[in-house]
Image 1 (cartoon, rainbow, N blue to C red):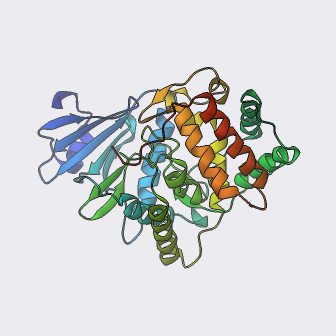
Image 2 (cartoon, rainbow, N blue to C red):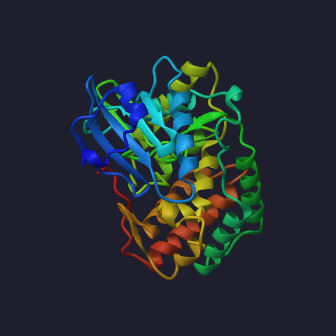
Image 3 (tube, rainbow, N blue to C red):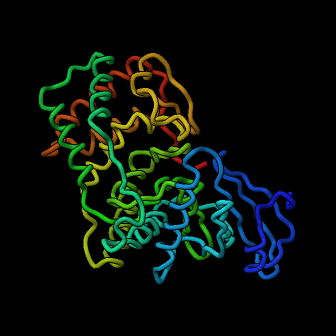
Length: 342
């Protein structure tokens, strides 16, 4: 396998001649090897596939360099690059199986990752893009398809939510896909990898993953409320320690934003296409550890609980609760999403 390794003359001059190389599992949009160099074992990643490969490579390199500036980096060191071949050479880190309370250390590291960027980094990465009015309209159509009446106030709430998320304060370094598998639990702490979707925005967008069920990920988990509170407390404490300020934004808004996004029911290669929420009444499909209907039922329950009595989202809370009841009545065999990480 090492003969196919994209390790050109420039990298050899800088890092040495590679020895044994082992191909590792990865998405179809990258190729990854563990490689023995004269002085260390490294990871070689080549970004491939699709017309956006150059952009994804540039995002990853930029994010790794931004994240490495802190005193306690939460990413592997970037040891070398070959832009012509879209290759990165990274510090190799040993992953060990995380414990049952893994989301606490994960949340602490996520906050430190987010805090690695600031206003001075504006323009270094694209701004995070939230849901649109089209997403809100698709969600309202789904309510109709489930025979759930929509109160007059809800449409306005959803449009205002879209506007709030679009102008949300923050210059956090967002991972873009902070999923189980993109977090390495090492003896030195949690380290994040795979930054091809990195952007700048509000950090609560990704803290919401813990409650809403990792919406961009094949792996959905549902932690108990006490553990969620510990993790969210760890995030806010780490952010405060790194920035001297409170994390801006509303976590209920962030979770509700993910609920609206039908693209968060399918893997990345199938996003930005048809209205996936419109498919829910007709059929279910499996992605990773849960089906689309399971994912949606979980998200509806989370948002309903978070927005009960909420000044700006109370109508959505009632609608979400009614939609969840309708789905469970139509498809009583729907089970909860997994509690544990595979």
